[in-house]
Length: 151
Image (tube, rainbow, N blue to C red; front, side, top):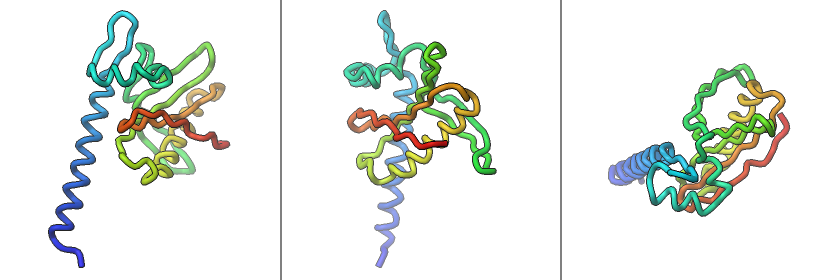
């Protein structure tokens, strides 16, 4: 039997998780790593700077909160990509999405589907580019490359 306490506790847990995720996104959004001067939360700069694969997403050339929209399978989709890094010389686009989950396995399939949508939408804009998606798990700052799937 579900009690009122159970319902309120579940709601409070979800609110806490959402608020924590929002705060982390805001902190990460303001990070810029530069050889001369870095900007943003010092603790996050230190953690990000320890991993060159992660740090590249926070260089001056990266874009944050990139809006993207389009149609996939007849369905209109409008999203924001947490970090995007475009290399015109190499013809590559790297997409990064932050996830604050403590247990990555809980929602991983839906997160992978989300990033694959981003990739598909980006292909419409950059048809000749190699586009790669990643998840940054913020509880441990591990970077996960999303497996390629034919479009």
